[in-house]
Length: 185
Image 1 (cartoon, rainbow, N blue to C red):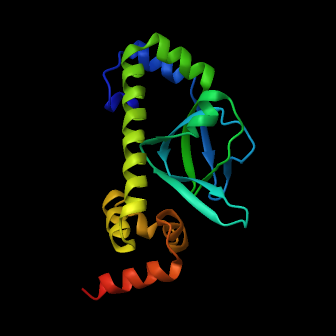
Image 2 (tube, rainbow, N blue to C red; image 1 turned 45 degrees about the vertical axis):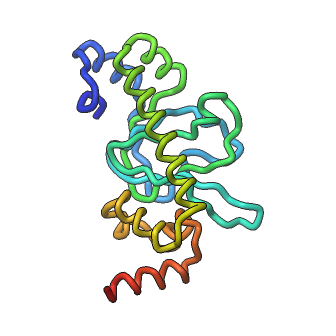
Image 3 (cartoon, rainbow, N blue to C red; image 1 turned 180 degrees about the horizontal axis):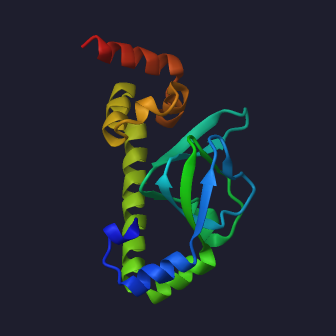
């Protein structure tokens, strides 16, 4: 888990473990609903989650996929203790390690290496979000799909095409056409 990414003493690991909540969730189980405050920082030990929003017509717009050995949260809601506009749910049965904001903030104050690691994750996510936004407004559907496949290796077997289309901001018909064209290459 975390100790693979940053140097931690046994004491640090014990402290982190003492406040973790291990949660097993079933496929399709909601972890966060729009209107709720996001109260946890989540590490996906095993499984697969998505973060999405519904528009006024009830259409899903997927913001993020989070697979094993990665972190997720709804940042604005979590940091500012505000109701979220997003949902987070499990795309597969998953095992999660979760920390409340208070307990994680205490860990950050106590373990400088964890604070540095957390800040680096935030910067990496900000960079990835900006890069995704740029590609969304400047790339063709084919380029978006190629980038998606490179970024999320192995995801095509785990996620329905309609969700990939939602993530890419293209219609299912367009995504199907792109995939057929690539298969014929």
